[in-house]
Length: 230
Image 1 (spheres, rainbow, N blue to C red):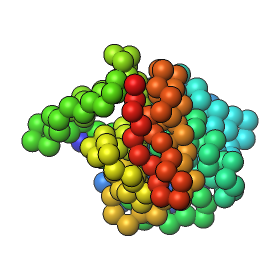
Image 2: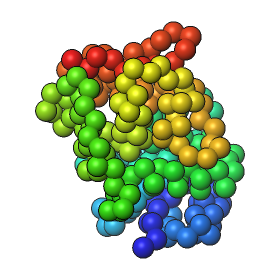
Image 3: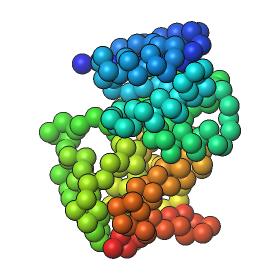
């Protein structure tokens, strides 16, 4: 069954370009022009992913994402006309899965959407990863996309789960940023260092709230490694 993608952007031309590119890739789309309409559309039919413009009037994309995250973990790909670090960091810390700056390549946007969808969808029985990962008090069950610390469930996005799984698969290794994001992205998609850092910051914040202050350690000048997680 084709994926259903909600596209929220106040520019009708951009909505048309995005919807055309996604539909050409075999997806179903719905376009809306403002944040309130986006929230209403989610209530009527839960999408598989939302392409969400940050700079919409009245209710911007960050506020839409904040409200969505109160009740839904639907993947979000942010769009912005501004290539400012604060937008990128705020967007990802609000719970976004990825970030694309306008002007963008429709082909790259479709590729990023496909990557997020692959991470978010349940695996088929033949593809199910039935391994259990445990490190200190941290546990991951990929087959059920379940994560917990000291028995307390963790609400991780698909991207955060994939990144953390990559660390737990090699708990003694130091991973540079390229290696970290290779666990979450496929193909030749470039991901900015700040995007990597934002995902790791989110993981740290969520684990810290659960009582784990050392989930991912920084090895200065090299990369990151899994902490003791005790």
